[in-house]
Amino acid sequence: MNQHLEIEFKNLLTKEEFQRLKQSFSVKESDFIYQENHYFDTPQFSLKENESALRIRHKKGHYELTLKQPAKEGLLETNQPLSKEEADSLLQGNRIPEGYITTLIDEMGIHSDIQFFGTLGTNRAEFAYKGGLLVLDHSLYLNTEDFEVEYEVTNKLAGKEIFDNLLDSLQIPIRKTENKVRRFYQAKKKQL
Image (cartoon, rainbow, N blue to C red; front, side, top):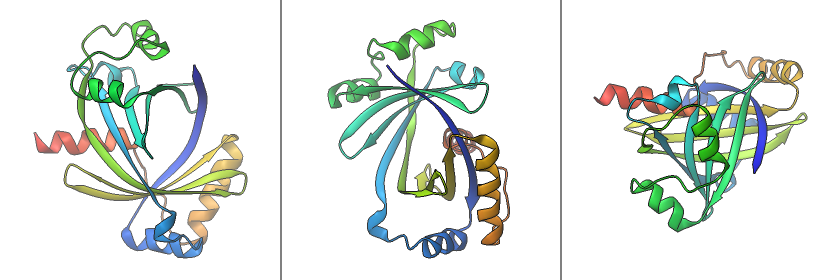
């Protein structure tokens, strides 16, 4: 089992602000790597009701099943590697492969069928910044395009100060920013 605590700060950006960040850190187009997040929940959105999210991430030919759950500080992220065949099977509506993630979902009292809801594609660049990881994301999903900066840290207080100072130095306003899965489901709801 692979688990870690995820503490991150995020801010949506305009396209111009995204370009400004790229220029400030000398990020080239070749620094971006494409990844896909395939999102799952029950028809009743039981995972969402438990403030949790389930995805398969496909990046550089590798597949990983991830369950994110609320923690005292940040999110507890549980990862389980998948073969291409296991990922394809789950995307086609079959059951989650046995493992720690199915145990955690059972412990939440979720016994409904998990189903595939859709894919969010992201071009991502990552680099070290002041003791954390700075991430630039350009995402496309459900006829929606957005730009985002994330800052992953191990110390919440210090990380928030560094992140806020970065945005301030580049004259980027702080915006209330939902995580990708919530933005994905908001876009999906608009389509219905």
